[in-house]
Amino acid sequence: MGLLDTEILSNRWDVENSLNNAMNERAMGWGQLDRTAYAPMTASTALQGDMQGQSIGGMLGGQQVEMQKQDIIDNIMANNPDPRTSEELRTVAKQFAEAGLTDYSFQITEVANQLYKTEVEKDASTDKDYLNVGKTLGNNLLTRPVVEVYAKQLYGYTDSEWEEATPVDINRMLKDAKSELQGQIDNYANRLRMDNVSKSGIRKLMGNDATFTQDFFEDLTQFGNTDIVNFLQSVVKFDTKDGKSTMVVNPEFRTELRPNDMELMDDGVLAQSIIDLKKTKKLSEIQKENLRLLEKEQARRGENSLHDADSKTIEARRTYLKSVNPIFPRETEEEYEARINGMIEREGGLVMNTYEVTDDNVSGWIIPTGQGIA
Image 1 (spheres, rainbow, N blue to C red):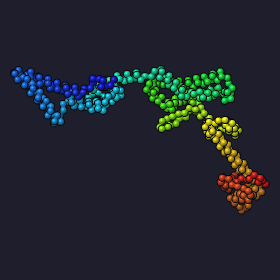
Image 2: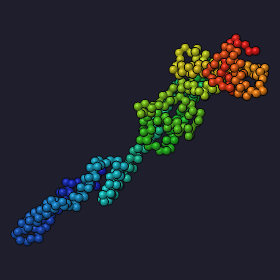
Image 3: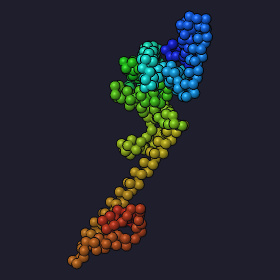
Image 4: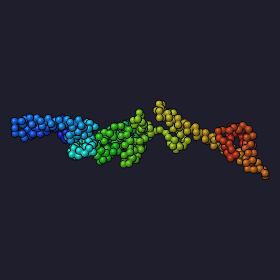
């Protein structure tokens, strides 16, 4: 129901008609006062005088109170053509109050209050709305590959053990895993129910899958199972495209290597991981990137090992040279170090790597293969 559906406000035509009727009634009253044969003329003269007075007043800028009031009404309604919600009606009521037409303001506010009750009842969520929250999230997140990965984690199965499991056991584990994940989703929907989130609120929340899922993760972090929220977050990636939030669900995201992951690998695990990936017949894009990172890390460790070995070799030679070539009585420490460094250099075949060589750091000097140590 809109404001125009009520009879609260007057309109210009009714006001003008009311004013005309009032002039006619006054003229008839003057005629009734004249008991002579000139009564009709008296009434006509009174009407003409009334009309002339109104015309002259209009020419001089005057206006009857009723029309002044109607002008205010028309101006307010021109800015609010057809208010139909309680919020719109309250805006109109406020404008009438500011214009001094408090009687209209009170009446419109009452209509707004009645309409608000109807809106609240109409926008109240049903059980079906909350069930739809859980169903939609489940369809978005709990794909078969995601549930399978969680089932392996839940029961501690390796990929090879999973392949050897019977179909009955696999179905049982998948059912348990999905039930546990869906349970957390249903708890989120129930918390929305306890908060009395309206139908329009749910519709807005579900308007974008990415923001919808992020709201779920935020709720789950606060109220849910930490292991499950960590798992679900590990299989989802959020992004922004054309100003709109987007998301991708892929259990392979869990296998993406990060620098701290490789730091925890010893050389044996690192090498075996490379071997396993190279044995894979068809690598995914994530696996290809993992292989690249693993090989890069292996090469880095190899270079560091070589540098460490070179450093030890140089230091061993340095110690020996100092043992057979003591410092001269008048030689400073700096001169002594320079003399020892010169001896190492003159032994021939030595090359410099990228490390800076200083008096206190000769680890950059590398003795080539075959160059013995005296």
